[in-house]
Length: 223
Image 1 (spheres, rainbow, N blue to C red):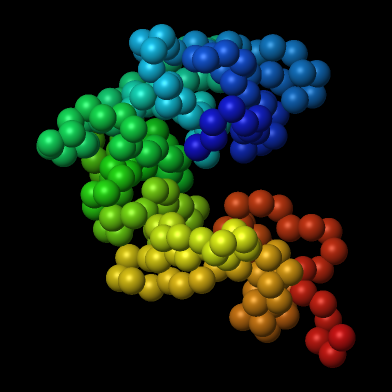
Image 2 (image 1 turned 135 degrees about the vertical axis):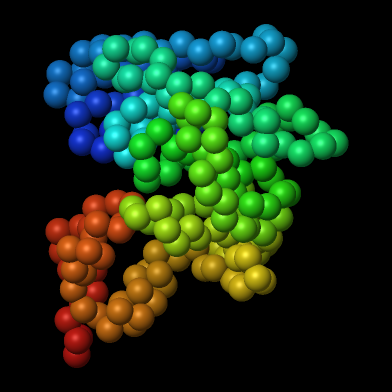
């Protein structure tokens, strides 16, 4: 989920961005007219507010403020559901919102909740507050992503970085991982090597979080 970023709904018809400490503005992308203005509880003025927001796969807006997760209708600004994610924080730090990370999940009315330093990641149904699934993760994981089917959750923990920040060290559950160069050219070469420089299928493209560029990702064999 994003903090202070401009985001689009899945259809690309609405955009949302944070305008004040506890307000998100939703606009129509065609004319940039205001559609709704969603304001949440602001908490104590002295607090460093933890505020994130995202569109889920059905187009509803999800906000998280200090561990309080709310689902909104972005066109009316009406609240659809509320869940206190700090309820998943175990003792001895109950109610500590800074330990909770919330993400979208590819199923209606559901989000993922990670309690940093604890396993597993929980999938929560917002309208009932029921945990519908759990996925084991490592203690250093801060986020997880699921494929469109809701399966295959992949999570990495940040372990360190090189002095010039060109390489980070990551680890997965079970200890798998290693150095990850922050070099897009390297990523492109390795991707093309793994897939045999073939074109992406429709199924491949549907599973990607971003659109592919118009030009081929992998150069033709023999170049």
